[in-house]
Length: 435
Image 1 (tube, helix red, strand yellow):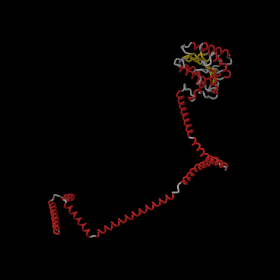
Image 2 (cartoon, helix red, strand yellow):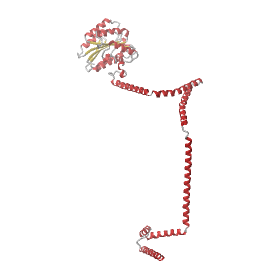
Image 3 (tube, helix red, strand yellow):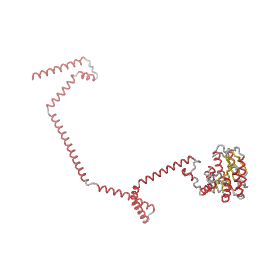
Image 4 (cartoon, helix red, strand yellow):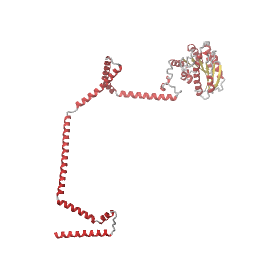
């Protein structure tokens, strides 16, 4: 929004005590005025806002938000009702003497009391005077709509002047029905956002509000009905979620279209089960059973119908098996018998080998020549070991208390070696003689 100086005219008559707006007309008016102050001051850093109640100027146009809010919330209720035309003239004079002469001029008028003593001609004259001074006016009607709406429309139309169709109108009228928060209606109105609309927009907004709040964001369907100018993050999140949901629905529709035959088969298989379950439930109800027992009977019938197709398929598979099954069983029995015979024959062979080994051993032990040869071989091996000097030295070293270097031991070993040599020579001579 561009630079603008705005005057807010509040209604502080006795009619503002009514509770048809939550919590009262006066407090609902203050809430809406707070919205307007925040919007105007944040739209441009040099924008100014003033406050007046009737013909009393509370705050001249300023950018000090604290001073403006203090004047709004400290507004007292007065018994006398002021003239609307006089209040509009005071506000126009305050705008005329503003500090910053640049920017547009606007008056926001709140009306919550009946305009019984105000003539339509006077309101039209005040509107033409505002048009002449380049002052725009926005009117917010709260309560007493049947009596005030027509008169206030004349004021707004006179301030707009004769404008061609399609040209933006600078003055607007918003009527707020009872039970609706004025701030909620103003948040989506051209009073806050600017733009065209005039009384037509006010009528549509009031009609939507009268239906319980309605869809005030009909123009923001892509953002879930939320104005992106008020809350861009929420609007973007709603838009993303709506796009994801739309894509999911399209994907599900494509999958269902690609599998029509499977769905038909499932319906055909489920139809008999459902019919049987329904028949069981009706029979149970006829028998005088309770609702829970009837549901139990229906569940049992459905489970039995589910098991029957499986049993039928198993029986078909068994029937479709070839008649070669008995032949296969006979072959397996023959193979088992052959394996048993082979294992028994192997056990008999092992027993015969063991018996033959025992017999040979007994024969060897009974043969005296074999025993003598064994004894001689054992003696020969023992003599060869004692003839080995290294073996004898190790044996003597392992004995406790024996000294290998003892002369007696050394002489005994020499005598033993000499005796062994003589025996060996004698055996050789005997062998030569025999030859």
